[in-house]
Each structure stands twice: as structure tokens, then as C-alpha cells.
Length: 282
Image (tube, rainbow, N blue to C red; front, side):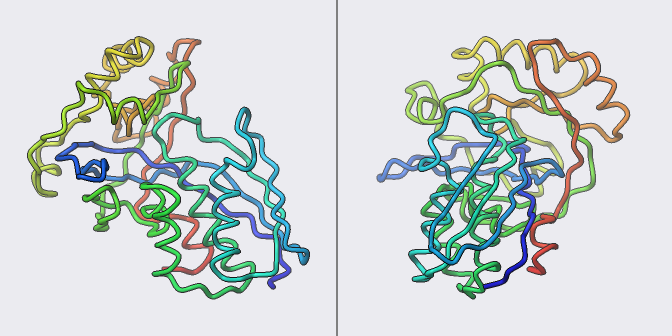
């Protein structure tokens, strides 16, 4: 076991667009999206234990530890590798929950990669990816560590180099139920596939936005407010919204006007995860 304490980032993402192109027989949805990593997210601290226990402490409220994806990821890796070691894990939660920023999925990826390093388990990358898929559809993109074009159910990834931009992300005072949206009769599920080149040239929207506007008035209000300053979009299934700016000052100026009932921050887009740089995985 590596005796060092590891302090690792779990970067968030935004969906620059999100199209639902079909529904599979198993109930999963086929999609197209561009996962854009940003330099904002949670932070996890890992230290080893010799008694095999997984001890998670977190600033996150309202979720039992056993249901947290960090705890689930740690147990999954421990069982897959027959590892007798354990870990103390501290999760400093910064990414809003239920916002469509992939916070829990990124936490899970950081846990898998961090503990594989800490325990010196040397679990192969392909097997780690299988564990990632079992934990959630968004976990693989954080395992891969690059801004990426995604298809299938989100697991077919192709790295994409995007120009550096600044994003203002805002969250209304509500959480959106992803399960409710995916099962809703009014969700558009037949969007024609597009190419990367077409997206880069023309842009694209989010198929969930009309439905989220209808079901969550606070999100609709946020889209209208942010839309006064820039092209406002939903990320994932929401509730977070974002707008892209070419310079940081413009984004900060809009943030300074944010209504009191919204949470917001400005972040820079990145093409590669700082987690992978720290662990030497590039």
C-alpha cells in the first residue's frame, strides 16, 4: 500500500448539447452529446487503512453514506481486486447535487483511479472501465479524462479538442429528477444524429429543455434570465444552466447580476482532467 495521503480533484462537466436519438429494448436511451470538462468540481482526500474498512466522511447533506457513489466505487474496486486494504475518504462537495454537472459520477471515477493507485492494486484500465460503467452512464467519461464526443448511452467516447472558453453556471433552487425525465411521455426520443463537424459549425441544443421548462418553473425562469446576456442552455437533465463566454470578465460581470435565489460560479473549460495529470495517466 502507498502510505501517502492523496488529495485529488473530481472535475465537473457540462453538456454542450444533448440529443436523444433513440430508445433501446432494455430501456436505455441512445444519445449524442459533447461532454466538456471544466476546472471546477469536488475534492477527495484518500488515506489507506489496513483493516479493510471504507470510512467516508462528506460535507454532502441528505444522502446516506452507503448510497454515495464514492462508497459504492470503493467497495466495487475492493471486491473486484480482492483487496484486504481499506481507506479513509473525505469528500469535499462543491458541485451542486442534482444539477447535471456529473458531480457524483466524477467522484466515483476519482475514487476508482485514486484507490487503484493508493492500494497499488494495478487493476487494468479496461477492467476499471467496466466497474465505471456499472456505477453510472456518466462515469466512463471521467475515467477517460478528456473532453469528448459521446454516443451510445454515453459510453462511446471520442476525445475532442475544444478552444478555451469561460462558462457561467447557475443553479435554481430546485433539483431535477433524471429518472422522471427519461420516462416522461413528452420527451423527444427521435432526434436525427449529427456529426461533430456539424455541431462545431452550427451548435445544437438540449432535448430535455422544453420538458424541464414545463415541469420546473424555476429552471425556466433561470433560462430566461441568463438568456438576456448570452445563449443559455441546460446541462444534462438540469437543473444547472450555463452560458459560454470568450473572456472571463464578461462571465464574471453577468455573475455579479445573479438573482439571490440562484447559485452560480464561473469556470474555464479544459480538454484534459487534472486528475489524470496528477496520477500520470496521460
